[in-house]
Image (cartoon, rainbow, N blue to C red; front, side, top):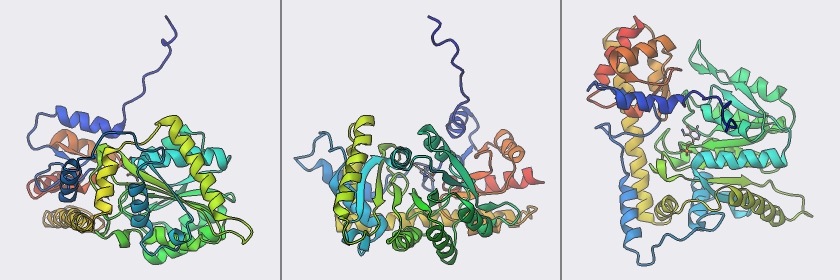
Length: 411
Ligand code: PMP
Protein backbone atom coordinates (compact mmCIF):
# COMPACT_ATOMS: atom_id res chain seq x y z
CA UNK A 1 0.00 0.00 0.00
CA UNK A 2 2.91 2.36 0.70
CA UNK A 3 4.76 1.51 -2.52
CA UNK A 4 3.92 4.79 -4.22
CA UNK A 5 4.00 7.00 -1.16
CA UNK A 6 7.49 8.42 -1.61
CA UNK A 7 7.06 9.56 -5.19
CA UNK A 8 7.59 13.29 -5.45
CA UNK A 9 5.41 15.47 -7.60
CA UNK A 10 7.40 17.30 -10.25
CA UNK A 11 6.67 20.86 -11.32
CA UNK A 12 4.53 20.95 -14.47
CA UNK A 13 6.07 21.55 -17.89
CA UNK A 14 6.70 25.30 -18.08
CA UNK A 15 5.36 25.71 -21.60
CA UNK A 16 2.19 23.70 -21.11
CA UNK A 17 1.63 25.51 -17.79
CA UNK A 18 1.47 28.78 -19.76
CA UNK A 19 -1.25 27.26 -21.91
CA UNK A 20 -3.17 26.32 -18.78
CA UNK A 21 -2.88 29.77 -17.17
CA UNK A 22 -3.89 31.39 -20.42
CA UNK A 23 -7.00 29.23 -20.71
CA UNK A 24 -8.00 30.24 -17.16
CA UNK A 25 -7.34 33.97 -17.70
CA UNK A 26 -10.73 35.75 -18.01
CA UNK A 27 -9.26 38.91 -19.64
CA UNK A 28 -10.38 39.42 -23.24
CA UNK A 29 -7.16 41.16 -24.31
CA UNK A 30 -4.88 38.23 -23.47
CA UNK A 31 -2.19 37.30 -26.01
CA UNK A 32 -0.50 33.91 -26.42
CA UNK A 33 3.16 34.27 -27.40
CA UNK A 34 4.05 31.01 -25.62
CA UNK A 35 3.85 27.79 -27.56
CA UNK A 36 5.52 27.58 -30.95
CA UNK A 37 2.50 26.95 -33.12
CA UNK A 38 1.47 29.04 -36.11
CA UNK A 39 -1.62 31.21 -35.78
CA UNK A 40 -3.44 33.06 -38.56
CA UNK A 41 -4.29 36.77 -38.53
CA UNK A 42 -7.23 36.04 -36.25
CA UNK A 43 -5.02 34.24 -33.76
CA UNK A 44 -6.50 30.88 -34.77
CA UNK A 45 -4.76 27.60 -35.63
CA UNK A 46 -4.41 27.29 -39.42
CA UNK A 47 -5.10 24.14 -41.39
CA UNK A 48 -2.90 24.59 -44.45
CA UNK A 49 -4.83 24.65 -47.78
CA UNK A 50 -2.41 21.94 -48.99
CA UNK A 51 -3.52 19.77 -46.06
CA UNK A 52 -7.21 20.36 -46.75
CA UNK A 53 -6.72 19.30 -50.38
CA UNK A 54 -4.70 16.23 -49.36
CA UNK A 55 -7.42 15.22 -46.90
CA UNK A 56 -10.10 15.50 -49.58
CA UNK A 57 -8.08 13.28 -51.90
CA UNK A 58 -7.36 10.72 -49.18
CA UNK A 59 -10.96 10.47 -48.05
CA UNK A 60 -12.28 10.13 -51.59
CA UNK A 61 -9.95 7.19 -52.21
CA UNK A 62 -12.00 3.99 -51.81
CA UNK A 63 -8.93 2.09 -50.63
CA UNK A 64 -8.38 4.41 -47.62
CA UNK A 65 -8.28 2.51 -44.34
CA UNK A 66 -6.79 2.60 -40.85
CA UNK A 67 -4.49 -0.41 -41.14
CA UNK A 68 -1.11 -0.47 -39.39
CA UNK A 69 1.86 0.97 -41.26
CA UNK A 70 5.07 -1.04 -41.49
CA UNK A 71 7.59 -0.60 -38.65
CA UNK A 72 9.70 1.88 -40.65
CA UNK A 73 6.59 3.86 -41.61
CA UNK A 74 5.02 4.84 -44.91
CA UNK A 75 7.62 4.50 -47.72
CA UNK A 76 5.99 7.32 -49.73
CA UNK A 77 6.53 9.59 -46.71
CA UNK A 78 10.08 8.58 -45.84
CA UNK A 79 11.36 8.76 -49.41
CA UNK A 80 9.63 12.10 -50.07
CA UNK A 81 10.84 13.48 -46.74
CA UNK A 82 14.44 12.52 -47.52
CA UNK A 83 14.23 14.50 -50.78
CA UNK A 84 12.74 17.50 -48.97
CA UNK A 85 15.65 17.78 -46.59
CA UNK A 86 18.50 16.50 -48.80
CA UNK A 87 17.36 17.87 -52.18
CA UNK A 88 16.27 16.02 -55.31
CA UNK A 89 19.83 16.04 -56.60
CA UNK A 90 21.40 14.72 -53.39
CA UNK A 91 24.44 12.53 -54.03
CA UNK A 92 23.84 10.74 -50.72
CA UNK A 93 20.44 9.65 -52.06
CA UNK A 94 21.84 8.72 -55.49
CA UNK A 95 24.54 6.64 -53.78
CA UNK A 96 21.93 4.97 -51.54
CA UNK A 97 23.69 6.09 -48.38
CA UNK A 98 20.51 7.25 -46.62
CA UNK A 99 18.52 5.24 -44.08
CA UNK A 100 15.11 6.80 -43.43
CA UNK A 101 12.44 5.79 -40.93
CA UNK A 102 9.23 7.44 -39.80
CA UNK A 103 9.08 8.72 -36.23
CA UNK A 104 6.68 10.28 -33.75
CA UNK A 105 7.34 13.77 -35.11
CA UNK A 106 10.64 15.52 -34.37
CA UNK A 107 10.65 14.48 -30.72
CA UNK A 108 10.35 10.82 -31.70
CA UNK A 109 13.18 11.19 -34.22
CA UNK A 110 15.40 12.70 -31.50
CA UNK A 111 14.41 9.89 -29.17
CA UNK A 112 15.41 7.24 -31.73
CA UNK A 113 18.70 9.08 -32.26
CA UNK A 114 19.28 9.12 -28.49
CA UNK A 115 18.67 5.38 -28.19
CA UNK A 116 20.88 4.71 -31.20
CA UNK A 117 23.71 6.84 -29.78
CA UNK A 118 23.41 5.24 -26.37
CA UNK A 119 23.69 1.78 -27.96
CA UNK A 120 26.19 2.26 -30.77
CA UNK A 121 28.21 5.29 -29.68
CA UNK A 122 28.37 4.54 -25.95
CA UNK A 123 29.97 7.15 -23.75
CA UNK A 124 29.85 9.88 -26.42
CA UNK A 125 28.87 13.32 -25.21
CA UNK A 126 26.04 15.16 -26.90
CA UNK A 127 26.58 18.93 -27.15
CA UNK A 128 23.61 21.27 -27.35
CA UNK A 129 23.60 25.01 -27.95
CA UNK A 130 23.35 27.37 -24.99
CA UNK A 131 20.42 27.99 -24.94
CA UNK A 132 18.44 25.29 -26.70
CA UNK A 133 14.94 23.77 -26.79
CA UNK A 134 14.49 22.55 -23.21
CA UNK A 135 13.37 19.08 -24.29
CA UNK A 136 16.68 18.30 -26.03
CA UNK A 137 18.47 17.66 -22.76
CA UNK A 138 15.52 15.66 -21.34
CA UNK A 139 15.28 13.43 -24.40
CA UNK A 140 18.98 12.51 -24.49
CA UNK A 141 19.57 12.30 -20.74
CA UNK A 142 16.51 10.03 -20.39
CA UNK A 143 18.36 7.52 -22.59
CA UNK A 144 21.59 7.81 -20.62
CA UNK A 145 23.36 10.07 -23.14
CA UNK A 146 25.33 12.70 -21.22
CA UNK A 147 24.96 16.26 -22.50
CA UNK A 148 27.18 19.34 -22.51
CA UNK A 149 26.65 22.80 -23.97
CA UNK A 150 28.41 24.90 -26.59
CA UNK A 151 28.28 28.72 -26.53
CA UNK A 152 25.77 30.10 -29.02
CA UNK A 153 23.92 33.24 -27.96
CA UNK A 154 25.93 36.24 -26.90
CA UNK A 155 23.46 38.15 -24.72
CA UNK A 156 25.51 41.36 -24.73
CA UNK A 157 25.48 41.71 -28.52
CA UNK A 158 22.37 39.59 -29.22
CA UNK A 159 24.41 37.79 -31.86
CA UNK A 160 26.16 34.47 -32.44
CA UNK A 161 29.19 33.65 -30.28
CA UNK A 162 30.98 32.07 -33.23
CA UNK A 163 34.36 32.07 -31.56
CA UNK A 164 33.00 30.29 -28.46
CA UNK A 165 31.11 27.82 -30.67
CA UNK A 166 34.24 26.88 -32.67
CA UNK A 167 36.37 26.65 -29.52
CA UNK A 168 33.86 24.20 -28.03
CA UNK A 169 34.08 22.07 -31.19
CA UNK A 170 37.88 22.10 -31.00
CA UNK A 171 38.04 21.22 -27.33
CA UNK A 172 35.35 18.49 -27.31
CA UNK A 173 36.35 14.85 -26.92
CA UNK A 174 36.85 13.10 -30.29
CA UNK A 175 33.69 11.58 -31.69
CA UNK A 176 31.33 13.82 -29.71
CA UNK A 177 27.92 14.48 -31.19
CA UNK A 178 26.89 18.10 -31.83
CA UNK A 179 23.19 18.83 -32.03
CA UNK A 180 22.81 21.59 -34.62
CA UNK A 181 19.56 23.45 -35.30
CA UNK A 182 19.13 23.20 -39.07
CA UNK A 183 17.40 26.60 -39.23
CA UNK A 184 15.17 28.95 -37.21
CA UNK A 185 17.02 28.25 -33.96
CA UNK A 186 14.75 27.65 -30.98
CA UNK A 187 14.65 29.70 -28.77
CA UNK A 188 16.82 32.52 -30.14
CA UNK A 189 15.61 32.86 -33.76
CA UNK A 190 19.28 33.47 -34.59
CA UNK A 191 20.89 31.33 -37.30
CA UNK A 192 24.53 31.27 -38.43
CA UNK A 193 25.09 32.89 -41.83
CA UNK A 194 26.15 30.66 -44.74
CA UNK A 195 29.77 31.75 -44.23
CA UNK A 196 29.53 30.94 -40.52
CA UNK A 197 28.06 27.49 -41.27
CA UNK A 198 31.01 26.88 -43.55
CA UNK A 199 33.37 27.56 -40.63
CA UNK A 200 31.31 25.60 -38.08
CA UNK A 201 30.99 22.50 -40.26
CA UNK A 202 34.64 22.60 -41.36
CA UNK A 203 35.64 22.68 -37.68
CA UNK A 204 33.29 19.74 -37.05
CA UNK A 205 34.93 17.67 -39.83
CA UNK A 206 38.41 18.58 -38.60
CA UNK A 207 37.64 17.57 -35.04
CA UNK A 208 35.86 14.27 -35.76
CA UNK A 209 32.45 15.51 -34.64
CA UNK A 210 29.30 13.61 -35.49
CA UNK A 211 26.60 16.13 -36.46
CA UNK A 212 22.98 15.67 -35.50
CA UNK A 213 20.75 18.14 -37.30
CA UNK A 214 17.42 18.95 -35.73
CA UNK A 215 15.21 20.19 -38.56
CA UNK A 216 11.92 21.25 -37.01
CA UNK A 217 11.32 24.47 -38.97
CA UNK A 218 12.37 23.92 -42.60
CA UNK A 219 10.52 26.55 -44.64
CA UNK A 220 9.76 28.71 -41.62
CA UNK A 221 12.97 30.73 -41.59
CA UNK A 222 12.89 31.98 -45.18
CA UNK A 223 9.75 30.50 -46.73
CA UNK A 224 12.01 28.34 -48.92
CA UNK A 225 12.74 24.68 -48.23
CA UNK A 226 16.00 24.93 -50.19
CA UNK A 227 17.36 27.96 -48.33
CA UNK A 228 16.41 26.47 -44.98
CA UNK A 229 18.19 23.21 -45.80
CA UNK A 230 21.47 24.98 -46.53
CA UNK A 231 23.29 23.85 -43.37
CA UNK A 232 22.09 20.25 -43.58
CA UNK A 233 23.03 19.90 -47.25
CA UNK A 234 26.43 21.48 -46.68
CA UNK A 235 26.98 19.10 -43.75
CA UNK A 236 26.01 16.07 -45.84
CA UNK A 237 28.50 17.16 -48.51
CA UNK A 238 31.32 17.88 -46.08
CA UNK A 239 30.92 14.65 -44.13
CA UNK A 240 30.53 12.38 -47.17
CA UNK A 241 34.00 10.91 -46.70
CA UNK A 242 34.22 10.91 -42.92
CA UNK A 243 31.35 10.38 -40.49
CA UNK A 244 27.66 9.58 -40.29
CA UNK A 245 25.09 12.34 -39.91
CA UNK A 246 21.79 12.14 -38.06
CA UNK A 247 18.85 14.24 -39.26
CA UNK A 248 15.73 14.53 -37.12
CA UNK A 249 12.92 15.98 -39.21
CA UNK A 250 9.54 17.25 -38.08
CA UNK A 251 6.48 18.11 -40.14
CA UNK A 252 4.71 19.60 -37.11
CA UNK A 253 5.33 23.21 -38.04
CA UNK A 254 5.88 23.35 -41.79
CA UNK A 255 2.82 21.22 -42.62
CA UNK A 256 0.91 22.22 -39.47
CA UNK A 257 0.71 18.57 -38.41
CA UNK A 258 1.41 19.37 -34.73
CA UNK A 259 -0.83 16.79 -33.09
CA UNK A 260 -0.54 14.15 -35.79
CA UNK A 261 3.06 13.39 -34.84
CA UNK A 262 4.59 13.06 -38.28
CA UNK A 263 8.38 13.08 -38.69
CA UNK A 264 11.37 11.09 -39.86
CA UNK A 265 14.85 10.16 -38.82
CA UNK A 266 17.48 9.95 -41.55
CA UNK A 267 20.93 8.56 -41.00
CA UNK A 268 23.46 9.35 -43.72
CA UNK A 269 26.16 6.71 -44.05
CA UNK A 270 29.54 8.04 -45.24
CA UNK A 271 31.17 6.69 -48.41
CA UNK A 272 33.15 3.54 -47.70
CA UNK A 273 36.47 2.07 -48.81
CA UNK A 274 35.95 0.04 -51.99
CA UNK A 275 35.98 -3.28 -50.14
CA UNK A 276 33.07 -2.33 -47.83
CA UNK A 277 29.52 -2.58 -49.08
CA UNK A 278 27.37 0.46 -48.20
CA UNK A 279 24.16 -1.53 -48.56
CA UNK A 280 25.30 -3.96 -45.84
CA UNK A 281 25.67 -1.00 -43.49
CA UNK A 282 22.39 0.70 -44.43
CA UNK A 283 20.49 -2.58 -43.99
CA UNK A 284 22.04 -3.13 -40.57
CA UNK A 285 21.29 0.44 -39.45
CA UNK A 286 17.70 0.23 -40.76
CA UNK A 287 17.15 -3.02 -38.88
CA UNK A 288 18.40 -1.50 -35.61
CA UNK A 289 16.16 1.56 -35.98
CA UNK A 290 13.23 -0.77 -36.69
CA UNK A 291 14.03 -2.69 -33.52
CA UNK A 292 13.88 0.53 -31.48
CA UNK A 293 10.56 1.54 -33.06
CA UNK A 294 9.04 -1.92 -32.69
CA UNK A 295 9.71 -2.12 -28.96
CA UNK A 296 8.40 1.37 -28.25
CA UNK A 297 5.52 2.25 -30.55
CA UNK A 298 5.31 -0.94 -32.64
CA UNK A 299 4.69 1.14 -35.75
CA UNK A 300 4.28 4.88 -36.33
CA UNK A 301 0.97 6.74 -36.74
CA UNK A 302 -0.61 6.57 -40.18
CA UNK A 303 -2.94 9.52 -40.63
CA UNK A 304 -0.51 12.45 -40.63
CA UNK A 305 1.95 10.37 -42.64
CA UNK A 306 -0.66 9.79 -45.37
CA UNK A 307 -1.42 13.51 -45.57
CA UNK A 308 2.23 14.56 -45.75
CA UNK A 309 3.05 11.79 -48.23
CA UNK A 310 0.19 12.95 -50.45
CA UNK A 311 1.54 16.51 -50.37
CA UNK A 312 5.09 15.42 -51.14
CA UNK A 313 4.13 13.13 -54.02
CA UNK A 314 1.55 15.24 -55.83
CA UNK A 315 3.00 18.16 -57.81
CA UNK A 316 -0.06 20.38 -57.41
CA UNK A 317 -0.18 19.84 -53.65
CA UNK A 318 3.57 20.35 -53.31
CA UNK A 319 3.20 23.70 -55.04
CA UNK A 320 0.33 24.66 -52.74
CA UNK A 321 2.43 23.64 -49.70
CA UNK A 322 5.31 25.84 -50.87
CA UNK A 323 2.86 28.75 -51.12
CA UNK A 324 1.48 27.97 -47.66
CA UNK A 325 4.97 28.14 -46.16
CA UNK A 326 5.51 31.53 -47.80
CA UNK A 327 2.17 32.70 -46.35
CA UNK A 328 3.25 31.65 -42.84
CA UNK A 329 6.80 32.95 -42.96
CA UNK A 330 5.75 36.26 -44.55
CA UNK A 331 3.06 36.92 -41.98
CA UNK A 332 5.57 36.27 -39.19
CA UNK A 333 8.11 38.62 -40.80
CA UNK A 334 5.44 41.29 -41.14
CA UNK A 335 4.59 40.96 -37.46
CA UNK A 336 8.27 41.23 -36.50
CA UNK A 337 8.44 44.56 -38.34
CA UNK A 338 5.14 45.74 -36.94
CA UNK A 339 6.23 45.05 -33.34
CA UNK A 340 9.66 46.62 -33.80
CA UNK A 341 8.16 49.71 -35.48
CA UNK A 342 5.59 50.20 -32.73
CA UNK A 343 8.30 49.94 -30.06
CA UNK A 344 10.27 52.61 -31.93
CA UNK A 345 7.17 54.83 -32.15
CA UNK A 346 6.70 54.50 -28.41
CA UNK A 347 10.39 55.33 -27.92
CA UNK A 348 10.76 52.22 -25.83
CA UNK A 349 14.24 52.25 -24.27
CA UNK A 350 16.73 49.89 -25.96
CA UNK A 351 17.45 48.64 -29.45
CA UNK A 352 14.78 46.32 -30.90
CA UNK A 353 16.35 45.54 -34.28
CA UNK A 354 17.01 41.95 -33.20
CA UNK A 355 13.26 41.30 -33.46
CA UNK A 356 13.42 41.84 -37.23
CA UNK A 357 16.85 40.30 -37.69
CA UNK A 358 15.88 37.01 -36.05
CA UNK A 359 14.01 34.39 -38.08
CA UNK A 360 11.55 31.53 -37.74
CA UNK A 361 8.80 31.29 -35.19
CA UNK A 362 10.56 32.89 -32.25
CA UNK A 363 12.17 36.05 -31.03
CA UNK A 364 14.50 36.03 -28.08
CA UNK A 365 13.37 39.46 -26.96
CA UNK A 366 15.93 40.13 -24.26
CA UNK A 367 13.11 40.80 -21.77
CA UNK A 368 14.03 39.65 -18.27
CA UNK A 369 12.10 37.16 -16.14
CA UNK A 370 10.54 39.89 -13.92
CA UNK A 371 9.49 41.79 -17.06
CA UNK A 372 7.90 38.64 -18.50
CA UNK A 373 6.06 38.09 -15.22
CA UNK A 374 4.69 41.62 -15.30
CA UNK A 375 3.69 41.25 -18.95
CA UNK A 376 1.55 38.29 -17.97
CA UNK A 377 0.18 39.61 -14.69
CA UNK A 378 -0.57 43.15 -15.69
CA UNK A 379 -1.14 42.95 -19.43
CA UNK A 380 -2.25 39.38 -20.18
CA UNK A 381 0.70 38.89 -22.56
CA UNK A 382 2.10 35.39 -22.14
CA UNK A 383 5.60 34.27 -23.15
CA UNK A 384 8.32 31.93 -21.85
CA UNK A 385 10.26 33.12 -18.78
CA UNK A 386 13.47 33.29 -20.85
CA UNK A 387 11.93 36.13 -22.85
CA UNK A 388 11.23 33.96 -25.88
CA UNK A 389 8.16 35.17 -27.75
CA UNK A 390 6.36 33.15 -30.39
CA UNK A 391 5.89 35.83 -33.04
CA UNK A 392 3.20 33.69 -34.71
CA UNK A 393 0.90 34.70 -31.85
CA UNK A 394 0.98 38.35 -33.00
CA UNK A 395 -1.57 39.82 -35.40
CA UNK A 396 -2.83 43.24 -36.52
CA UNK A 397 -5.35 43.27 -33.68
CA UNK A 398 -3.02 42.55 -30.78
CA UNK A 399 0.41 43.86 -31.81
CA UNK A 400 -0.27 47.36 -30.49
CA UNK A 401 -1.37 45.99 -27.12
CA UNK A 402 1.81 43.87 -26.95
CA UNK A 403 4.06 46.80 -27.91
CA UNK A 404 2.47 49.05 -25.27
CA UNK A 405 2.79 46.30 -22.67
CA UNK A 406 6.49 45.78 -23.47
CA UNK A 407 7.02 49.53 -23.45
CA UNK A 408 5.48 49.72 -19.98
CA UNK A 409 7.45 46.85 -18.41
CA UNK A 410 10.90 47.89 -19.67
CA UNK A 411 10.65 51.45 -18.32
N1 PMP B 1 13.20 20.49 -32.15
C1 PMP B 1 12.94 21.76 -31.88
C2 PMP B 1 14.07 22.74 -31.89
C3 PMP B 1 11.65 22.18 -31.61
O1 PMP B 1 11.42 23.48 -31.34
C4 PMP B 1 10.60 21.24 -31.61
C5 PMP B 1 9.20 21.64 -31.31
N2 PMP B 1 8.99 22.59 -30.40
C6 PMP B 1 10.93 19.91 -31.92
C7 PMP B 1 12.22 19.58 -32.19
C8 PMP B 1 9.96 18.79 -31.97
O2 PMP B 1 8.66 19.03 -32.21
P1 PMP B 1 7.65 17.89 -32.62
O3 PMP B 1 7.94 16.69 -31.78
O4 PMP B 1 6.33 18.47 -32.34
O5 PMP B 1 7.90 17.62 -34.06
